[in-house]
Every structure is written in structure tokens, then in C-alpha cells.
Length: 248
Image (cartoon, helix red, strand yellow):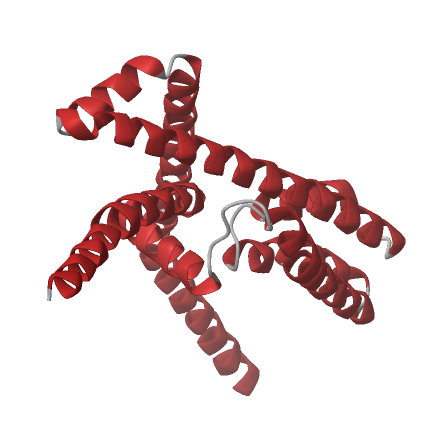
């Protein structure tokens, strides 16, 4: 008798659980579809933004003269030659910075590939390419690039994950203390605080694509501030002050 009462009670409990699950299925399915849509739309937006920036860059590089003329029209006539010279300096600074960052990306890719191959981490070349590409985003890029190889190494052995972390720390120390000062010593270099502020600002206004545009635009902004604000405005004021003191 006790078994006969106990078994139906268990069946009733299971049936109630099944009813609760089936009742919650529509909301769970809606949530899953919504999350998938958010991820898909976000990824599609990032891809479209990258394609848009790439197309615009190709158009600018293919025939830059009309765009330069259009840009110079917004300056007073007496300042257009000076603005053209500043644009030339921006071009030189961007070319130099691009060469330096590409060299750093290549070296970090090679070092990461060699280190991950020695540690026998899965897909070392793909992880190394990711580390090299994310070098374009200082501060945040190296942190993101070390996550996939650490997860893959952790699936093999805990000590291997620690070894991968140490490897990436050593590579980033070599890049920040040896490669960057050596490569960028003759190019336009940015202070770490300025780099971080530029990334945060452009990420807020332009999202993920702003992280890629932050440093090139910061290099251009530095040239304009140095040439216009410091040399053309503040230096002229200093000369006027000196003339006033001489008159006295």
C-alpha cells in the first residue's frame, strides 16, 4: 500500500515538473532567439563597419587629390598652403607609424607561433595571427589575444595554461620595452595615457571600429595640434609678448 501511494506521488511530481518546463519553453525559446539575433546583428554591424572603413580608405588612397582640395577649401586662402604642408606631415607620420606597427605585428606573430608550437598548444598559427592582428589595438588587444590559447591550453593541462600566460607576458614586455622604442624612435609616438584616452573616446562614439581608428586619428590629431596650436598660435603669441617687453 505504501509503495502504491508513493509511486503515484512521484509520478505526479514528475508530471508537474514537465508541465512547468513546457510552460517555460516559449519564454526560453524567445530569449534564445533574441540573444542569437543580438549576437548576429552585432557581428554583422561590426563587419559592415569594417567593410565601410576599408572601402573609404581604398577610395581615399586611390585618388586623394580631390579630397585634399575639398578639405583645403574650408581654410582661409592665406592659410591653405600651410594646411597643405601640415597634411603632408600627417601623411609622413601615418606612413611611418603604419610601418612600425606592421613590423611589430609581424614580430609578435612569429614569436607567438614559435612559443605556442614549442608548448604544443592547438592551432598555434591561428592564435599567433590573432595576437599579431590585435597588436594594432594597444592595451586591450594583447589581453584579448591571450584568452583563446589559454583556454585551449587549459583543456590539455593547467600548467600549460600558466606557461602560455607567461609566454604572452614576456612577448608583450619585449614589444613594449624593445620593439616599440626601437621602431618608433624616429616616428610619431604617443604617450600611453593619450593612447588609452583616445581608445576610450573613439570606442564610446564609434563602437568596436573606433578601437581600430583611434590610434591613426590620434597620430593625425597630434600633428595638427603641434603644427597649428603650438607653432602657429602659441609661438606667435610668445613672439608678440617678447616684442612688448622690448618696447618697454
